[in-house]
Length: 449
Image (cartoon, rainbow, N blue to C red; front, side, top):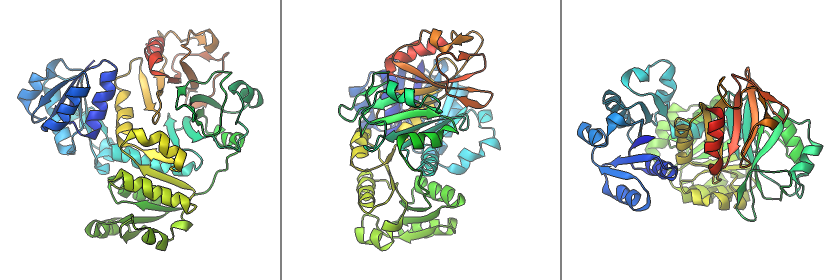
């Protein structure tokens, strides 16, 4: 697939890296030389320097024969403009990054396709949405809904008191065969290795586990793991960034008690006018005395979303040391992920990962309806649509030549989530959720083409 990425910021560079690893034909455009030099030296891609909305530059990049243009500069107006121009020049599909939540939610009122923008993505909106979802599921560190929650992927760290510790997957399944969940991926604490679980896979305390489950299966999963659902109501948010503002707005509307701390005085007053149901505090969240003075110890959750990853990490560690039940940190460096889970940051939010998850479903084959890449793990979870010519159609799962590096996490049929076992027959119109290692993805795609 031939893809042009307009904008070599953090999201653009991350996408270029991921797509180049998959041998896609990538051209990266930016006006700044430094990020292009980094990309050119480290990635097998083409780079062009100049104004991303330049018609002559887009033509030089071969826009007329391009399958997809992804505009991810820091300016949403530039991104929309580039998509509009590129569509007129013949590109097949356009995606524009925006940060304004109002624009994102206006898609039902405004026909963006009419002006050449096929899809809008907002990493900030996605991050705020993820914060809201994970606060509603207190024990989980990751969560992703398929088909409005018919099936849900959840991740958690296996606690030492859990009955799953030092048991194989087969032993667990023998004891919980009637439960509505399935283990789909593991990151071992001891080795950092990611694997698709098999019957003889032994689970250890500290392993990061990922399950798919139905709505009914969530409380069953809590019980089976020895976890308790804790009601979180009092939330402290550090940073009135786009993410912090949107999260505070959404959470207060859901009935949470929100304290939002912002060090910029002018922004703090502006946000206070826009969020009358939240308590806005002007102060430096790096000041330990301030956090303690604002009753940090009484908070159920602490969410740090400033523009500085180190501030977010350190403040979350402080919150954890003060007994806060759940902590979330906005972190840009994905290399930190494994370490942070082990030292007390429950959930790491990464805008680059959220944006790439959204974009990758348009690149995958086989009618992919949804996709998410797991944090710092070498697996993807994809939702496929089964049509009449799919190789899996009208076959029982046990009779499908499914690669060992992949597993079916569940099936959605007529809006109902099903944890499907070997005797289950897949039919036309089903939506099948699959977890796969990178080396198995092409094999899986062929089954659903």
